[in-house]
Length: 297
Image 1 (tube, rainbow, N blue to C red):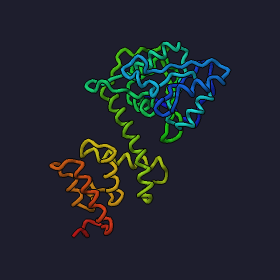
Image 2: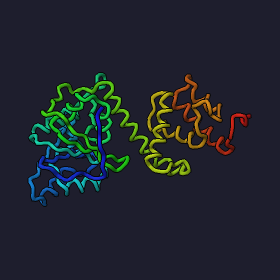
Image 3: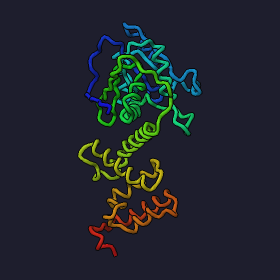
Image 4: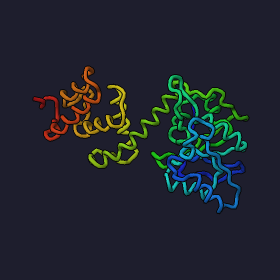
């Protein structure tokens, strides 16, 4: 079992060099800003665009960059994309070895789903992956990194992972196993749930929980319930949230609206159509809410 610790801020620097992987898709004009800020530093700055030499080379400016850590660049990145900007780690490996390792990570594939870019430089995705993997695989994912810090936008903390291997483990096979690939999918679902909080804030503020983290957990549970009906996307999830926020549980045996429940379980109808119909029906039903199944005419 891989253990993680979390804190509200990064620990002070050690003797080991500190590095960052910054996300060019979230940090506009990343290379320009790195170079500009670098001129003001007293320490030496190095950086490498990690998509150079790959099939995504033409959009490498929007991809991840390996960058020497500095407080100034980290502060700029955090101000621009709070807790989403990338990852931070310590390593005494050369920049060439770090570049090689990280290129393997971001070009990692899953059998049957080749040619996808693995966004392991996204801290939430990498966190979900590392939590799902076995110890030997964990050390391979870490490679030459001794300590890794993953900003967590869901709770505004940093999760720390630490290698226990005396010598760096090489990631020999750049392939996700099924459990690891599922964890990447789960991270995507977690992001979807986080974005959907804004929908609840705007249209169903009375369904907000005591904290944003609790509301996130509430939405995640609704998405898990919805997945029993089939493959879902953010739009379908929005329809379902509308229904649940108006009518409460409509998939369980305690549903007060059996006509909605029956409609949602009607496998002969495409899922999108079922959710659209149930969403429309929920608007009228919410005007005369029921407090028990017995009140159902």
